[in-house]
Amino acid sequence: MWHFKSLISVICGLIYSFPAASSTVLEAVQVGLNNNVSLIASRKGVEESAYNIDVSRSNFLPKISADVKTTWNSSSTRLSGISDNESAYNDHGYGISLSQTLFNLSDIYAYGTSKLDLSIEEVKNEAKTQEIIEQITAQYFEYLKNGAKTRATKAELESSMSRLTQMNRNVSLGNVAASELYEVVAQKEGIANRLRSLHKDKEVILNRLSLLTQYPLIPSQDLKSQVLLTEIPFDKQTDLLGQAMKFNNDIILSQKTLERSFRTLKETGSNFTPNLSANASYRHEDTNNFDLSSNPNATGISDDRSLGLVLTVPITTGGSDYYAYQKNKKTIERNDLLLTDSQNTVKNDVETSILNINDFSQSVFTYETIIKANYSSYKGIKRAHSLGTRTITDLLSAESKLFNSIRDYESAKYDYVIESIKLDRLVGNLSPLSVEKIMLMMDNESTIRHQDIIPEHLKN
Image 1: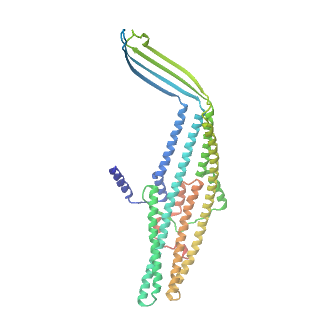
Image 2 (image 1 turned 90 degrees about the vertical axis):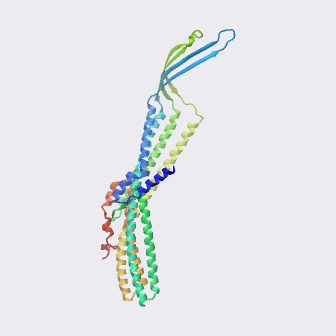
């Protein structure tokens, strides 16, 4: 066992030691759809449920059985005054029987329930598929958001370190007081700490992405520096809510679960109805007694044939069928309430997602204005500080505001996309096609990485 576990550990180590492959968001989704373990298990559940239909269908087919037997018999009786009685013979035979259910209401309902169970498993699988697409896409854009914030923080750190070098020179020359150096040091250390946390978060995100896809991937695309992230108008909000009420997988699953409860109630009720079945059998027996003088009738060949109809009328089972029927009625009431709860939850989630998307859209425009203002303010304060009319505190504050607004701006863009994917899942139409539409807003990641931290359209 130890060697087996060691082998598994080596194999897993080799798998995760493979170099990470660059991929677009659509490629990452496709890899995940092919390799995600929970999704593969969900598909196996659909296949398993499909076999239950065949199991239920078998109740409508005849049941045939056959048997063959052989028995060796030997007996010996010691008698007083007369001859002993001994016999030894072989008894063998074979038979075949057939039975066919002609009418059983429970089997009919059970067959319909098995088909409904397959439909439920298919809905669960579709829900799991959309969930995996959402999770992979979300982690993909979380990685990109982390990268954008990291680039801004690195630029801020470089600026802070350059300023610290200059301040050390000024202090040594006696041009500025040493107290001003402490503010610069504190700011630099705070930025370095933030950057370290971002690097840690990056590894966590990549690990989650690898877990979802079962393969080490690195995003190769990023959002364009200038994309149009529009709000969702009111009329479209109404349409989205209507689609969600029809196509959301949680609602569909609740509806089918309620439907199954009604079928289960019918199955239970069918236990009170009579059943009709037919049977036929044939039996051949051959008994060979070696001692014919003692019992001539012990030898013979017999052939038995029978045909029959059986009508079974249930009378009572101690009340178990009655209580099961009452229990299933309560199950229907419970599932009906759960359906209402699912509808209310989905309605709230869709409305919340729309509000978030519209808020992120407005935030992007707002942060663009803020970045322009902070950039102009930073340049002015930097110039004033070089002339000695503004303090180092003013300059550090202006720089922090600028970079914070850049990070907030980048976060709003990626959060907008992540929330849009979530909305597609809530509406029930999330698919690789949805991901392809998002890719229209993306470009090669390497070209984005080397662009200026402050987008060109925000420097004017």
